[in-house]
Image 1 (tube, one colour):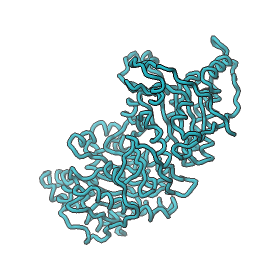
Image 2 (cartoon, rainbow, N blue to C red):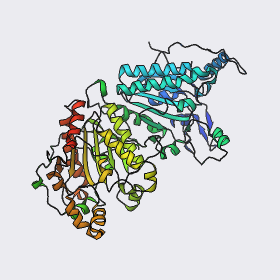
Image 3 (tube, one colour):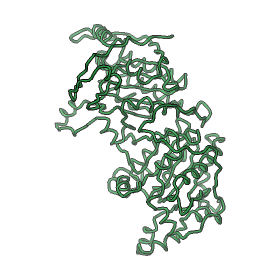
Image 4 (cartoon, rainbow, N blue to C red):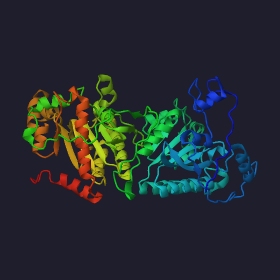
Length: 577
């Protein structure tokens, strides 16, 4: 059934910004998508305006609302509830606080539930919950991504406990989409509080937010009154939460359409279809969220080395120094060179966003994949900011979150290993470093999708293995992989760090020895004097090897992928490899 959108409200001729006071011509303000050109305040816009900004022209059809009781409690405060509903409908042009539509964004099918704060503060009542569930069911039937645009003060008091129950109802709808492998996305706008924030707003796979959006369970006034303390500047803003790993990114309104289009294009077939089915790529303007890569040639043959004698012979210490070279490509460098439409995702959703591990969604040779890797940086400043590639527990938990997303969407996983080891600091221990690593080892042993790991630099101890439990493990020819650093081994066994070169030789940590002992399944040759001399060519060689591995693994069912991965590691130390 086709239902038209509510009537469009014409913009005022002149508009004064409520924050900076700048007076903006109404038509210019509309062209700026409701963002002040003076101070970049993202003003609140209507659900209709949001749909018009995000969706392709003429593509939207409103999803018919299921029937719900209008005044289940017979509630009256200063006004009867039915009268409040009537006033809200007149003010907003909507029949409820959410507008649910199906349509396309840059040609990609999507279902959206878009909230409107003008309707009783975007409050969550029975009708809103029923509409969101109906929209989620439409996304499930059509197997397209589900977008939630949130703007709410919380649950609707006039419906009492029935309103509270909508938190569970909507969360269950999101769980069904998870089970079906449907990508879910939230666009959090100002404000998003209470029962909405504590249910469907924060459950999707990808959480984007507009600049300055306020998000939380309790409002700042309530918090200050409760704890008797002044809150820090920027508390509960999107930027505040992004820094704490609770949302993926903060995106200006002008970039949202292209960002959503790219995310939609990466929806894999998942549990109900063939894995690794390439989707068509979207057109559209680039977003700062996305790296625009140098395109890799499709189908370039792999140059993998499988015989140890073909791998260049180097002393262990020389290999260590090359593996640590500051100019070696990092995970984000490889993402730029290898992947199309890479979207970096942030945070462990538990309170941290470790910069030493990065990851996100992208396409390798047309195949949607999840990339996760250690990130060192190149300059001293970058390395300090990235903690020299040594992850905290938040880093491993972020990696685990992305692995679970890959399993849900049916995307293969590529991990790039380059770390001296897990961060050994006080805070890391307090936050469960050992627990985080152990959980990743267990999780990677159960993933139902192909996993390929490549040691691109240093493979340091358990901090490296936490990204290394894979079906195929490869290494660059100047990479190293060891139970401990040569310096650490020398200090313990030789009682002097100066014996590091001797320890490096004894540990047999270079690529040639790793292949001899079948720790790695193949070695990717590096050009020239090493990857740092030609990062682009190194990336092409790595991409070809990984694409070939994914091609080999894609024919296997999930049970076999899991069984083979477990058997690969079970054989170590038994003499059977």
